[in-house]
Length: 235
Length: 245
Image 1 (cartoon, rainbow over the protein chains, first blue to last red):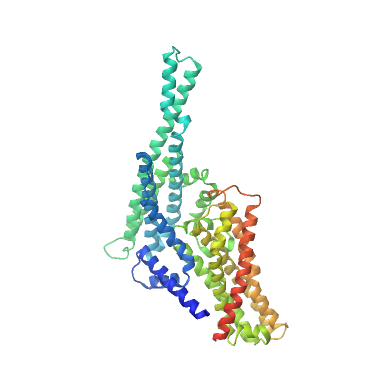
Image 2 (tube, each protein chain N blue to C red; image 1 turned 180 degrees about the horizontal axis):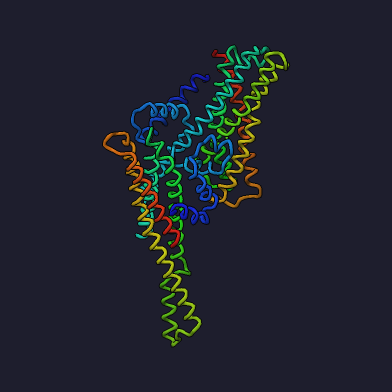
């Protein structure tokens, strides 16, 4: 097989990858989109991993396993947060022309927020795991306390004091977990709002929309999201 | 401001990523700028490339643009010097066309061929990096090399010009230098890769216990693999294109 035949096969695979990327990104026909399509087809080995990543991400959300309700709810939130982040990034990626230029200063802030949310999500996961550990087993602490009190020991007893302190630590961690959970939920809603506003920016050059006011709203929401993230870090 | 406070508060959690973002807000990110300076902020774009297609496209555009321009300059030199011998045969009758095409295609093709190996080497070293991150890192080396080649180009052009007007002798050696120069400049790309993995190594998950000097071994493995595949690709593609034109 010569260089021409190899190149033909390479191009066929490239066309398949480019079509899949086109569909995955929901592109509409434009000059820049055609240029992108050509780039994807010619240099497909560098873009194919991105395609596989998206496929895996959507597959993993479909996988179910026999776990507890809280874990499933947490996983749903994680995947929802991840999906929302993906949608926001895709919405930004679809911007072109004037809107792309004016949104650029906001991108770094949005990127920082998305990263911070990832950190907060990871923290929530760690808290959940810790609450399932032996040291943070409330049932066990309560049983031990009940046992000591039934034997006639009062609050002055060092063992009772120690168990009491352990109980307070568990309660503190539970409260931190609940607050982080709520703040993440708030951030998620804010992200969805920003995503919809960024999508609206695509039509900012139309007379019925005002670019300045839209940008102000996006900036306001990014700042709002920053507040949520800050509150999360202070939990 | 609230945002500044937020970023500062998270600087403790993710020191290598969050801290540069405060500075990043001061001016928009330009890939070529970051590549020339080997700015740590480029890591953010690399990580963002895992979820977004735009950074990959930008790195590829810079890689292709820089390499093609450099190849065009070397091809022009070969065209003007009208080389006899094996070098002249390899470049064909129209080196102005064959060399930039061969150089760009060989560099990108070799990179594409080496990607799975790069992924395995990274995993074996103990860094649990995704295939997408590896692709971005490979393109980072290529883009940085391309940008730096453009910096070297005026010096090379001046030497070639000296040869064309007869001040300097050795036409074939000059073209050989032009062919070898991207590999020498590529070492700067490898240095950038080392530094980047050094930073990312603090945040990437640990695949298994990392051996001593794992980063040096990893970068050496990447470099050796590429140094073997790329010259072969360049030779074969150049030969094929010379036969066509």
